[in-house]
Image (cartoon, rainbow over all chains, first blue to last red; front, side, top):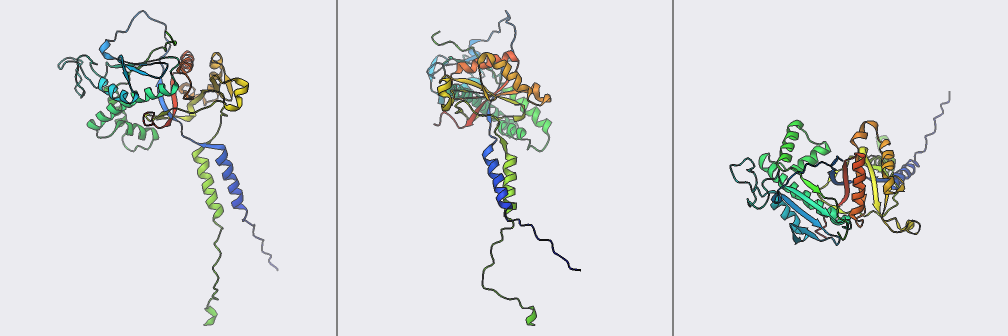
Length: 207
Length: 157
């Protein structure tokens, strides 16, 4: 019986087909790169008569005007000095030693005229409606950086790793080990320097 | 003995291209995995501000809001005042609630409560517009927002 060999399928054009697909996907897709500054908005509540009192010394007022100039604690400031100023304010720990509000991990100047402890310290940002979004984000970024700096310092001292790096590995899910333990440690650090950024209603220009 | 001797040719054998499709397929799969389909058609100029203290966005539970001046090809039709875009359309500030509710319904049901609003706003826009959007979001009780930025720092420029 004559055996006829089946002819081989020509696979020479396979590469061309695959290249075509590859180019199609390259054109229609984008590499995932969305990152940003996360914020939690305050929930809408009916106005109450009760006023929360914050001592003036515990308030750090950052004012941005319509031409993107910074007024920090009633002094004109450059953007590059904002981070330092915010760190000095948060880390001040002005409450006298022995009182309940005393901050034993603060390394600031302990100036009684500035914030009592990081828990009490509130940073308030006031914008004009005509402030550019670029400046707004730059200010937010510097303030978050100040918090991150202090949190990093404390976690390095207590646990030997950096807060920001650990949150990053946890987010990526690449952390191996006792996750609950780390989560509670992260919360401890967050409680030491709680992010208290308040945002005032922006003023209309000229008011 | 000469039976086992191979015929020696002086020519170089041609390079085999048989594995080329495999290599290209590998590249193809790599790009399919790391990229996502572009889902929104940008109608506004969108140069994002720079920041370095950033967190990653969870894409499956986010709704995008774009804002900025209309792209150059739409300037004649819509003028050069900053506009808001949700999905593939321009949206008015009064209409934003409806558009957002609609966008939220497209997400997976179990994630609709954890929705995060990603704000992609052009750096030249006024903060006033962002504030208006935030007020609307508070009304809708969508409180988690994220300002999308590009890596970098304004100070080092």
